[in-house]
Length: 445
Image 1: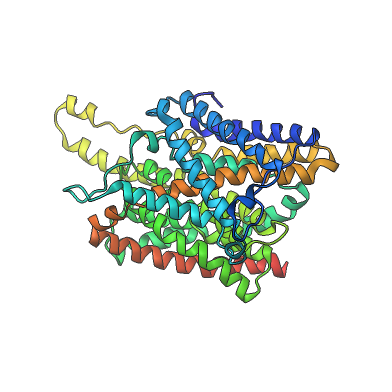
Image 2: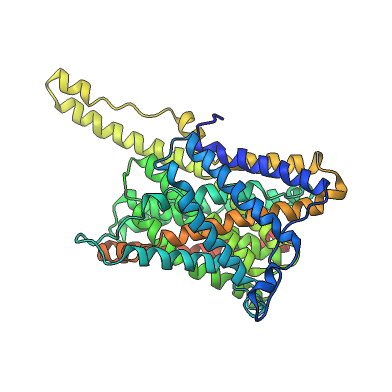
């Protein structure tokens, strides 16, 4: 729980902002929002409530800056430049999404934020380098591309009522813990046996699809000691998650799926946490039921990152130990033998290091919301806190867009085709199985 550990900063920032929001509501300060506009975009800024954005923007930037400074992130001194760009694109995305025709088409700020980020990324990349890679983002922008930090803060700020969470938790477990571990193993084996993908990359691709996108990919890569083998799966997920974000909410609306089933469906089968919230926001029910349900299901699923990472590490460690023993026994020189000793990381340590700490922040916020905040203030605190969290979400979507490097996807065409095939198969199975589980959990019981 150290000051200089990045895993805990979403909790500290989220809890601080939650406290600030609660105090603000007690003093009559309300959430700022973009009013709907038709022809004149400046109509959206009417009203003094929007003046709160002038305070919110530098406050958010300062808190993230403190987090990066405390963990000594690369180029943290230049963060403010990148933050201004990302916040500006998020601002434009929200502003555009407030247009009445666009709003009626459910084209939310998340879609525009991803699009703006992707356009900026590929314009800045220019022509590919001689080895086929894209030019890296400038350091001042890269340090502000904190996708996981932004989305984790937004989730800590979700003030879910215990009365809502209590009935949701068992159902969320049913939706996200029944098929996820099984399908993760089966699809990884399909990738190695049928598509001839190496086991490490296949496991990373499968885990990223079934658990939590880039977070799971990075965690599994670390558990497997796979180096940069997570790069291509993350790139594929970043591109192909967008159709799911857009298509699934419209399918749910067209078929007449209820908000709870739709939220559980998105939470269980959309790849990353940010994409889940985006899909639920596009679905757009009046009471944010889909957002709350999707967030709970995804958070319960996120918890699997720890146990699955530990399980993968345990299996992989045993495999490496056997290989190292064979190598060790074949060496005659005692000095060489000592250099080949294999010392695995303690399993409990690995489990705790992989556990998503923002889940604890989310739980603590829910407890404070239901015990400390007066009952008459809870509706306004919920609205205000959700608004602040949405700004972090939108900045995470801009960051997702900044990660879409189209030149990178051309560099390894053969592996790209194999991984895309594996992803499509896994995603199709996940969509179908999760819908069945979500329907059983939220409609039949």
